[in-house]
Amino acid sequence: MIKVITYGTFDLLHFGHINLLKAAKALGDYLIVGVTSENFDRARGKLLVQQSLAERMEAVKATGLVDEVIVEEYEGQKIDDIKRYGVDIFTVGSDWRGKFDYLSPFCKVVYLSRTEGVSSTDLRSKGHTLSIGVVGASPSLQKFMEESRYTSGIEITDLLPLSGATEGLDLTNVRLCDTYEQLLSRVDAIYLNAPPRMRFAYSKQALEAGVHVLSEPPVALTKQDAETLFALARERGVIFCEGLKTAYSLAFQRMVLLLRGGVIGQVKSVEATCTSMAKAHSPWLFDKNEGGGALIEWGAYTLYAAQQILGRDFADCRFVTMKNEEGLDLYTKLWMLYPDAEATLKVGIGVKSEGEMIISGTKGYIYVPAPWWKTDYFEVRKEDIRDNRKHFYQFEGEGIRYELAEFVKSIRQNSIASLVLPEDSIAIAATVERFLKEDGIFTI
Ligand code: CTP
Image 1 (cartoon, rainbow, N blue to C red):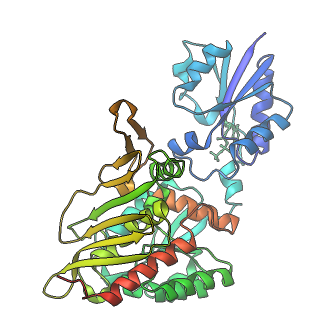
Image 2: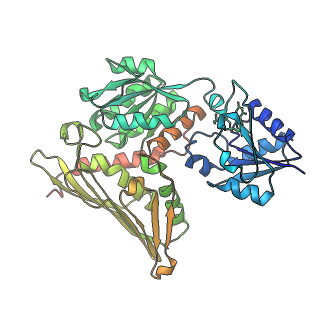
């Protein structure tokens, strides 16, 4: 009996896939198909797969062409499978020509001709590439534009530079807009990195124009403004979401799940620090009038973490702020009191510290090294060090590609996927508002 194996994502099964499976089956007597798991696809940069693993496996089975369906979950698995199943022929479409020659010591490698004119990518975008406009200033725009290359089905088409800052931006194939109205009339969605004090107005105008918005955090400086934006998005049937990179870090997501499962018992304390000294994110970082300052710049990240771990309902919070002569918040320490726990959050733009996170519980603690807000690693530590565990997850680049992929997925599904929830963003805006109101009370 000749055993044949092939692998693929098989998202939105199409006739290109069917042709491939028919041809693969014809090569032998028994066909095994490895369908890639979500995590494996994510690790290899395929971020916009629409169907779940179960749905894709079911669709492959339903073709009736396949004798066995397995899951592909890790790098190097193909060699293991070939040995384990006694495979004679490995086959794949010609778009992969040469890439799997390394398997030839283990079995015969055959590249089958790929069907022209159809792909899952095209089906996902339904022939329509989302056009995205970016609003803001370098260097954060540059990072965004670079990372957008990893998300299929979108194109950065237009740019409105704020603060006149186009320096260092690669403007190939991007139109420079003179006005915001012009940009909004040309695009399906925007990535917004306007000065914090202007963000609400920019988002509101975009949503009113029926344009989807991915906004830098915080989305607004008051609870009411944040609520208004989400209500407006709902009313207009467009997606509005906060681009909080941490939310899309697999390590962070998994850590929260472990905490909810009680890995360190009851959580009693969250300590998280975020600092940066340079104008790394925006030219207005040090401009109070534009909404610069440590808490506005970094607060959302630490607050999001506290909210995910301890909940949105804290009993009280206190701020200690250190300002420069112009009254700009250079360093703020937030202390959040929960009924049975506390969070100490430190943010700085003029004070440097270790950007780590420590979560303490009744049975141990979790240590996340700097920069915890885009981490690929954390450690669960116990009294008995033999019980310590290290957890690693893939996190590429700045993490923008993941938030962008989720944003695009939400637009295509017309509902928020697994993004930061509106309630999370509203709660963050409420704490920012409180900080701005109470400004001065605990100022040093
Ligand atoms: N395939 C094919 N003809 C097509 C599309 C895919 O022969 N038009 C083959 C691929 O070469 C591969 C298998 O089908 O061997 C599974 O491919 P997959 O990556 O799942 O499909 P794509 O449509 O190429 O997906 P995407 O657009 O997401 O890359």
